[in-house]
Length: 119
Image 1 (cartoon, one colour):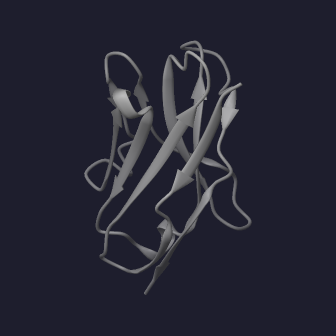
Image 2 (tube, rainbow, N blue to C red; image 1 turned 135 degrees about the vertical axis):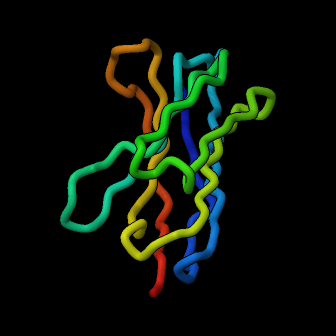
């Protein structure tokens, strides 16, 4: 059983920064990759970034590249999301997720952490 626990959310002013963390626990945790998603009120869940667990290969959509950076610390079983130059439209609940294979669904999800950006 794998558990993902996000932390680091909060309220910041536009232009500020936050770093989210996602700590994973469970026996032999070794996913193919981990990712961050977000969901704003009334909107569909949106993919934010992903990172492969072993090689550390990252992917961030062009719309977020340059502001959002995903990283991981394998020794701590933790994935991070550094968010800079935050905008009010970044307000959402941010979730981390993990999956076992490259093309499968994300099997494990955290409970989410609220990020609110004030203008």
